Image 1 (cartoon, rainbow, N blue to C red):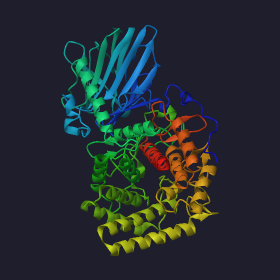
Image 2: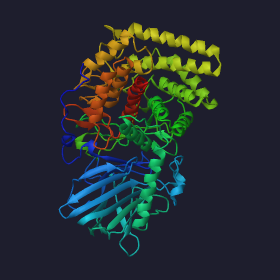
Image 3: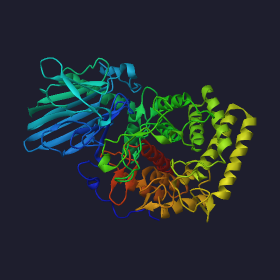
Image 4: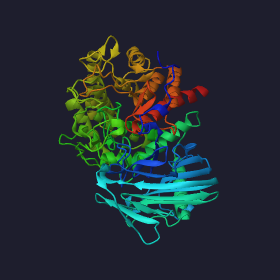
Length: 629
């Protein structure tokens, strides 16, 4: 086994070549409409507005000429400390300079609320018509004196649109930037000056001095008029996040901090107007350094539904679960009645893929992709994810909503129609379709859950029909998907695939089954690097792409869950501890982890990784709590 202690990875500070910061060094801000990434030097290197999937306005994440917004001490690039305000997605950065100390707060504000008593544990983020749509940054000099610099250099439409600035009024404290059909307003109590396509301000703060700046893209471009208003908006945002977190069931366990940060991250990746969750904040952060495995993840994957519902119900976040299921219920199916593998956060179906050839890509990884060409692939695992999530939601809420029953019927019938057909698989391989075991397994999940839902609804005829097909699929997998006593990637290979761990998570086989135990052991022993799990070996799998990829964090968390399910609780704990040690300095996870260099790879922060962390934590926490009694 390789899930115990071993050589530690290299420090993450050595993660990516200059001038691109390591992916794991970014902080994540959110207002539940869009998100921002803040580099350690105080520069916002990624922000799309008004929504997650809008074109970027600050895009230095993908090209060092694609726009940034820095508010930090002049000439100092490395802060003393960075942390989230406890229980929030508001960032606090402390800077020591040769002459003094300052603290900067950054927030995508959630509001507006004029009075503290307007925010309760049941307050939800505003919809479009009453949201702030604002980035607010404040600074306070704690000791000595510090030269604070503001540099705002937008590059609209993924770096393709040049900004044109116009000062507002004669006081040099407010200016509008326009480009590519967008306009935002910058306001600060620092005096501002236009320098070409950027704006700049600088001021010396002394002990007790405070300053602020704010960007607004709201209708009317309303911005805070002074520091006190800026501070009130950040304070209201802090209260909102803490009030929201108070509604979540965070276990009193040593894993509570990690579960809490994951909950805040998943909430932060949720698009409030529809309840959809984006897979990640970013596009085209590479899975292979300098390679072509770069994808746009700012959409909602239907396969995430069951993992999202598992996490939300474990955390007792019923409102969010209801919102997410309403989003699923409103989705437009394809011509054959099935749901696509992914949708836009507004429910749109067309996610046609294009490239932005003018961008260098993160650390030279090209192409930069906008849209996702896999949206119309055949992936037969979708039906199981949808129906498992509906069953989870039905059991937790105690009722089967009438508007969800047609989805149960349509997805069960689709699974019955296609389960014998090859597909592209859970990993969206762009090679030849295959009979992937995980796809067959999820078709089994679809019919098994549909049969249980039919029983709940009181329809014995459909229950018998669907359970019969589920048994047929189960037998087919055991006959064709097993080689040498181990579940394989697909019917025509000996290769392993981490997605077969879903056989444990979805109850395809009981925890004491020998085939399940051997399959889990095979992945732990033969599909890992330094104990972290690969989704598959690229030299054994035709995925239509070149290059090697890192270990997949979701697969490593799946292995934690699977080990716990087969009764290897200590091994599960050991692997979980190793996974917690490789989190970013702020407790965030990308999609992949390069065990050789210690760098995070892929889009960031990744919802799937955090969802799998919560699921794995639950597998550890519940048995441990039972042991105590």
